Length: 245
Image (cartoon, rainbow, N blue to C red; front, side, top):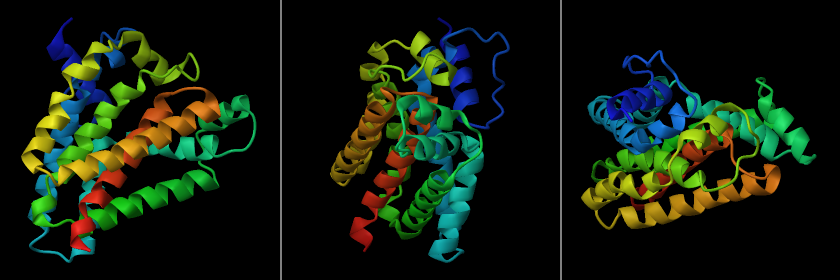
């Protein structure tokens, strides 16, 4: 297993950074690269945190939040936002499991998808606006633990046998869940006790997303992974603003 190659795969999947995705893609590569997902989350978080730090002295808080979020979206290519919209449309639909899966495959967002996107983006922008300097590292914790949650979600069955979720499950090794926990735990240690309620609330949010997915479609998919990342990031950021209110 070429760890450097898998690191490039992880960056190529989760960011728009010019790392150069390997051309010799093999089935299961996204899952094998999962061992690097939390580290990639740290890199994303550090870049977003630096942007937030640089903008804060010069712009009003809400402008800082919106501009920082814009950089965040560009950096990740809006990858997880697409999954969020698809899940809001499909998982919240009251029809059969097959109908829900069909809606999630539809590339056109519906009402629930648009509302879900707006709520999450608004929540993130507001949270970034209210974050105190002492809570800034919460951005990095949010981006790394949310991607670690993808690994944790792999313990659930697949909702269907196609797509990125299936490719991830094909190559992923569950031992990576324990090995990679060092990344979010390390950031949490740097933050201190302030990270404890944030981690708890993000775990509750992750459980809610995965519980909804399991109840609605019987498992997880690439879209569910996207919703998981977006929702847990937003919830964690909001939890770090509680002391500023």
